[in-house]
Length: 82
Ligand code: SF4
Ligand code: SF4
Image (spheres, rainbow, N blue to C red):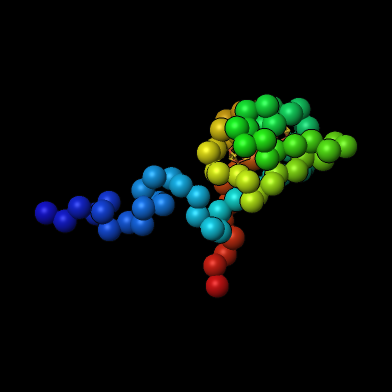
């Protein structure tokens, strides 16, 4: 029998970071509470003068910040590939 999961790329099977994926911030929803900053194990989410910044190069897409956000301002997004 064909195992469909074995045909998928390793990165997708394990939920690992894909080059085009990133954490998107909806600044209309963000209340700058700092909850995502507190849970980020990479310290890549930071608040600077009431602006939330995410260092995408350091982000491992662990997704811990998503449920930590009380306003639903964070989401996993993908850039269109060409
Ligand atoms: S996905 Fe993980 S590493 Fe990336 S900003 Fe959120 S908590 Fe930090
Ligand atoms: S947890 Fe949500 S509301 Fe709070 S600073 Fe992060 S993105 Fe903004």
